[in-house]
Structures are given as structure tokens and as C-alpha cells.
Length: 256
Length: 319
Image (cartoon, rainbow over all chains, first blue to last red; front, side, top):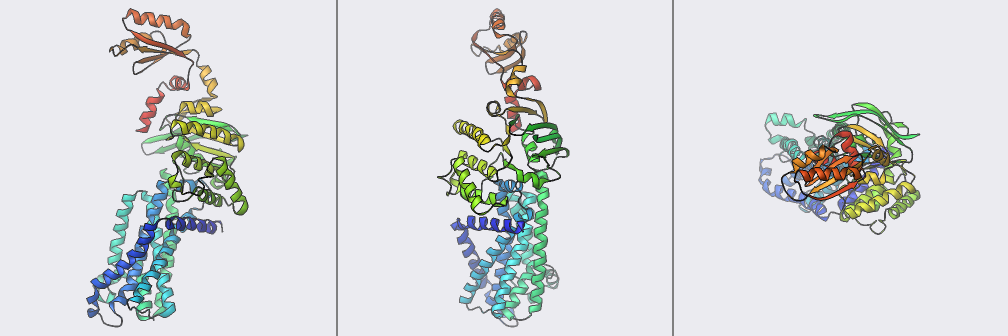
């Protein structure tokens, strides 16, 4: 209860602080649109290689939504580095602040940002002629996938931030983890076009759980069971990484 | 009852023995100063007492609670003003205070009333609704102190409260701390590497050096215990005979120290020693510009008990 209340107030703090940064808001809105428009153009010929329903825009929209959520989560630990540098975290830790609340507030903030971006992306995609074949439940699945993906990787990112505590190390780690996970997923290509060994790996890639769920909701509007199973895996991943980040406070406190 | 009891704290960071058996006690309601050069172990002691980190061995009690066994109980009864400001730059002064209060489980009218009271107490009413990024160093420091006080703690930790402030802001902060100690009936543990700050604010001090408490007591008593006076002899010019002067003066007084062109020493009685010192320097042909005597300072106390020069060690610790 205490943890839930503290999480709430800390989310309010972060949302309010972000709202005071117009550049951040502009980036949050423009960047995903750029991804969508650029990739949509770049790979537009791929449809010709593809069997089945849907334009490439329809295939890539859920991919971009998930990529955006995943990167947003992966980079969200930078906020923790900044709070550590400003000693805000020390101030919280010397007060009866729940460590889990500190982590969850950041993780939830990353998740909410991802939902907002997913909404913007879907609206732009609608304007480009994309149809969400899954209808209203389809929209919900896309939102859930982005929310959970961002949270799962935000937990990981905040754990790394507490372990490394330096911006430069954090950037290196985010790239080191982020890039392979992106290319070992079906964000840009459907699994049908992948070499067998990559296809095998993607099954265990949490990024792909989100992409699969969102894509079948947009492109096919069926296969709900599998989508829900993938979302369930993501819930577990988000819980695991959040607990990992909370545990990382021990390492941080040993170092000070 | 003692508000803080510290027993034999030890902590090691890789190559550095930060705490090497620190023990002391702070009485309820007093302002207690941990005085020492940079790197002596003051901040590490405070981080253990505020539950931020754990010692390798030893015990500590704050407001009657064991910091190792019941960290959350300790956190509820302490305020912590860290060496580095913990202000959230993107939030206003008021928002900073409200969030800290909420972390302490406060809410509603009592919280808002307390925040208003504190903003007045530290003189930030006018800046309360401005984002803290624009605050001056002194304003951020005052906000830090208000943040530390929001839940009416019994014990307040002030870690280097005036480091980084200009002399004017420092003097203002001293008055502030004295006033707050009164108004909030607090026990304050203050760390500082400014001798005059400890002298001015603390009823009792403990001098820390290399992870150990060297000596403790009221500043006046510590100085009185050092019998005698210090004599400073300033040489006339860069005559290259500082070493000779140091040797000659050292033959007459004790604890000789050279600072620029000034040779300092401690003697039982200044009035008797000055003619002797001047005569000896004159015989050696060393010209003197001025001579002054002074009652011992905490600087002399430090030199006496550690055999080391405070300011030299302070700079070394910073590096």
C-alpha cells in the first residue's frame, strides 16, 4: 500500500518534470513518426516478397510501435543516472522510501510514454491507410504490448544504471543489449523471411513476444491465444527485471 | 539519553580504510561537530548513520534504534542533508518538499501547512513556486535543509552544510543552523572541514583523522587543554633562510610549522618567549617583519593531537 502510494507520487513527479521539457515532448512525438515514415518508405518493396495479407505498412506499423517501446525502455535508465548524479536517490534512500517504488515509478513512466507513442503511431498509420484488423481488442493488444515491452526493458535498464552509475557505460550497455535484440526480432522483417537459426532465436527474444502479439492483432486480427500468451511472458519479464533493478540498490549502497 | 551512539565502526573501500574504529556519542538536543580534513571518514560515518550504507563491523544507534537492525525506523526519525544537494532541479521548491513529506507518509492539510511553515523558516516563500534549477547555491542549500526537516525529525545530519558557499552565504547559513536547532529542538550532527565552523556552531566536537576519532570535547576545553600560546614570526623578505629560522625557533618552542614566510610555534608564555626568539634570530642575522601571539585555535589542537597540519592534510584528501 505504502509502495503503491509512493510509486504514484513518484510517477507524478516524473511526468510533471518531463512536461516542463518541451524538447523532450517534441522528440517523443516526432521520433516514432520519423521511424514509421522512413522505414515505411525504405522497405516498401518488401511487400512483393511477402505472401499473405497486408501491405508492408501494416506489417511494419506494429514493428515500429514495439521498437519504439523497447528502445524507450532500454534508454529510460538515463533518468536514474541523472537522479543518482543529483543525489535525489540518496535523499530518498535515507528517507523511508520503498526501493521497489523508486524502480516501479520509473518503469511505469516508461510504460505510459510507450502507450502514448503507440497511440500517436497508430493514428499516423491510420492516416496512411493502415487498418487494425483486430478492431478494438487489436488496439488494446498493441497498447498492452508497448506498455509491457517498455516496462520489461526499463527494469533492465534501471538495474544496469544502478550497477554502472555512469552515463557513458550506460550508453554502451544500451547499445550492446539493444541492437542485437532488435535485429534478432521480426521488427522489420516477418519471421517467414528469416534464416532458420535466427527464427529459432527470435522465439526467446522478449522483443519478439511484443512484436508477434501486436502484429497478429494489426495484420490478421486472429490468433488471440498466442498474443495473450506472449503478453503473459512480457508481464513475467517486466516483473523479473523490476525485481532485478530493486535488488541492484544493494550493489549501489555497497559502493557508497 | 544519547541521541546517537557509535561503537567501533569500521569500513573499508578497496584500498582505503575509511573508518578504522570510530566511536562517539551525541547527547539529545546538542549540536555535535565531526571535524576533520577531507577524506578523514566524516561522510562515511554519516552515510552509515543515515542507513545509506553498512559498516564492515561495529554498531550504531540513532534515536534509540539500531541502524543495522531497523533501518526504516531510523529513517523515520532522521533528517539528512547530504554534502551534495539532493534537490530535484526540475521541480519547484514546494514540489520538492511535498514529495519528501509524502515519502514520509504525510498528506493533506497537515503536509501543506508544514511545507508553508518550512518555506517561511528558510526564507524561500517567494521562490517556492519556481523550478529549483534557477536557485542560487545558497537557496538550494536552504531547500535541502527544509527537505531534511519536513517530517519533524529528532536528529538532523548536516554533512558539510557550507561547502561550496561563498563567505556571505556561509555566515547566513550559520545563523540559520543556530536558529533551526532552537526552533525545531533538534539534535544536530554536523560534519565540517572548516575549523571556524565547528568552533562557531558545535557545543562539542570530535576530531576525525584517517578513520579514527583523535580527541573530543567542547572546542573551548580542547583549546584550553593546549597550554600556552602560539607565536607567529613573519620573516622580512625572501631571504632563503626559512630553514635556519625554523631550526632556531624550533629550539625555543614546540610544534613548529612554516607557512610561506611565517614560522609558527607554540610556547608556554608568549611574553617571555618573544624576546628570546627575536634575540636568537637577530644573532643569526635573520630579519623579522612582524611577530604576533595568539591563543590556541582548533588548528593547533589538530596539529597537537595528530602531529599533522590540518590545511595540508585537507588539500591532500581532496586530491
